[in-house]
Length: 290
Ligand SMILES: Cc1cc2nc3c(=O)[nH]c(=O)nc-3n(C[C@H](O)[C@H](O)[C@H](O)COP(=O)(O)OP(=O)(O)OC[C@H]3O[C@@H](n4cnc5c(N)ncnc54)[C@H](O)[C@@H]3O)c2cc1C
Image 1 (tube, rainbow, N blue to C red):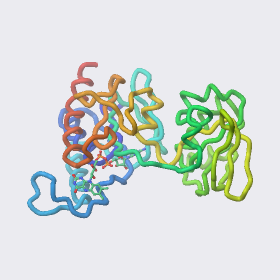
Image 2 (image 1 turned 90 degrees about the vertical axis):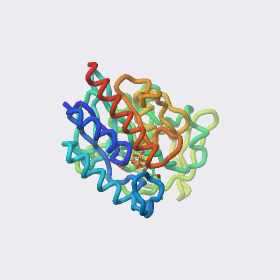
Image 3 (image 1 turned 90 degrees about the horizontal axis):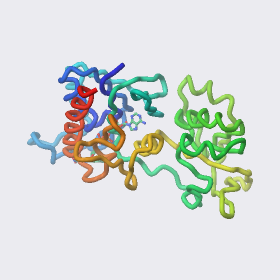
Image 4 (image 1 turned 120 degrees about the horizontal axis):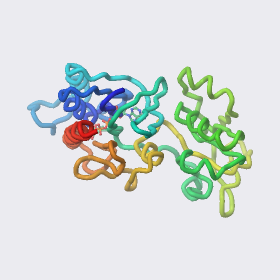
């Protein structure tokens, strides 16, 4: 059991960990090595550096600093977060329990462009199997995606139906070993999707080879899970693409905090560091209060 689990190893997540770890809380960071900061060749506006530094340099130093205080850093992808008495964080390769969780996953990327996808949102297109799976009892559903996240959604949907297809939209599956095995029991369709069709509700899915299939529901689980995907499942408030937090970086779910680009606002290293700092401080108070 960890005290603090931090999802994301960019400046927000790493800064938060410095505080929780120095307060002697058992801290785990889970993150892919893909902070947007790695793309920044030259940073000239971050306090304390009289000469430009690269994003890569800041991240590497930040990780070294966190490790010096005993933070455990795991290179893995989070595909789901569940809450019972504590938080269970499910990754491609494991499952971790923590008393408090920080979302520091950066800005959610715009993932997919398919004609009519947004038009059918709430009318056959869903972003949350936990929330909407129940409406598709014994119906034909699809999961749109090609990574572990998509297979995880398909597994959740098995509670309601056994007619499940994973639509990769022209991509090859990119699965970890565990999910390669799990994916074998689902139908996989690798054709490129051109559009969705139906009258009031979703009824058909169309492909670039001119073919189409009947479908009752599509669950979007494209690319990696983002803060928005976690928010939808946990029922926390979002505003557009941003997770809503109060002045203490706390979401509306006790013990769940968010910091950095995933909360919107001014997307800068200094902002992410500041929010991570505050989140770390407030996580300490929360964990000690339990
Ligand atoms: C080209 C470029 C140049 C920039 N230049 C500047 C600049 O000069 N000055 C400045 O202040 N800012 C700059 N920025 C902005 C700055 O990089 C961001 O504001 C900052 O990195 C945000 O930090 P963050 O920790 O919130 O998110 P990120 O740095 O994006 O980190 C998010 C972390 O979450 C991880 N993650 C996401 N989803 C998952 C998942 N499902 N499972 C596990 N891990 C996950 C990612 O892999 C990453 O480790 C620039 C950005 C870009 C793209």
